[in-house]
Length: 142
Image (cartoon, rainbow, N blue to C red):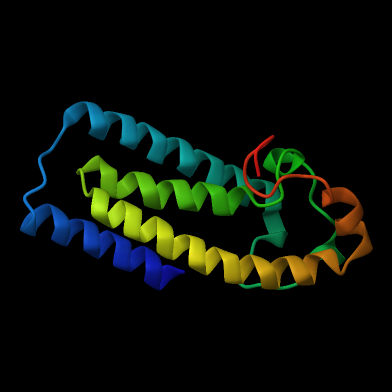
């Protein structure tokens, strides 16, 4: 995922420079606010997870199942936050091609990672009991 995020940032810079994207202050302000909000959610996730926090797919449910913080509402708030960050960041500088291409690539990566992660997590009966029926990313949507 780090490689994908680096590619999005590089792509945005190249798009802005070579395609001479205009800087649109209202769009920049709105996307910066979205970017900051996504960062707040991501740090809320990290703080809530505490010793569970890890960047690798692993079964941390032996430490217990986290159902507080943003996990009260969704199973994967971090992925939603990171996706939002990577969508909003290029749009601060009107790099809409990079934002869309990055979103499509991110969906592909997340689809594979979530299939693996949920297979591991849902193997734990406590996790399954706590998270079955909760949406993955956004309360009330999906």
